[in-house]
Length: 168
Image 1: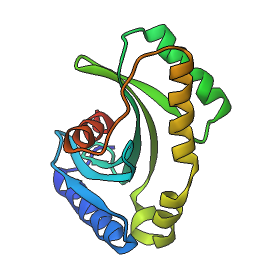
Image 2: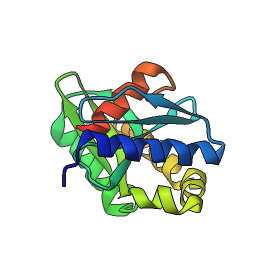
Image 3: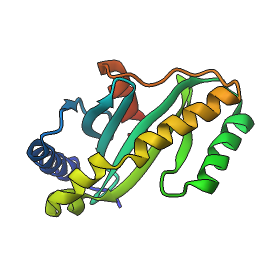
Image 4: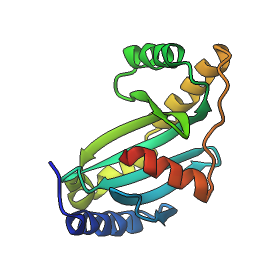
């Protein structure tokens, strides 16, 4: 299900136009290897990346940065993610383990047509408190389990980090 970069650029332009109509504050991010996207902040420590990948076809991903710079304790982190996902399948979280650091993301994937053809979808998604509640709940679980982490923050480095991790 791959597409030519020109096709993903067309989807990015459509997504940009749709976001522009919502009144949400967002910023365009530089292309990150296999695609591009946008960052939004709903709070100083609640940032979101909307990504269109060259490999996603007519789909786009929305990722919330839950936690970054986790300790490299795979079993423990995966257990926390799995326990969350057992009870909250609508908002799944996953470990993104990379050489440069381990993060937990909440990622959802949708057809790009929802953004292009259903203007109410964007507003409904943006107003959905379930995402913020999930991020807070997973962070609380990490604190209770005494797992060290740093929250994503609204800055250019974290926004680009989140986009890159969403795309790979």
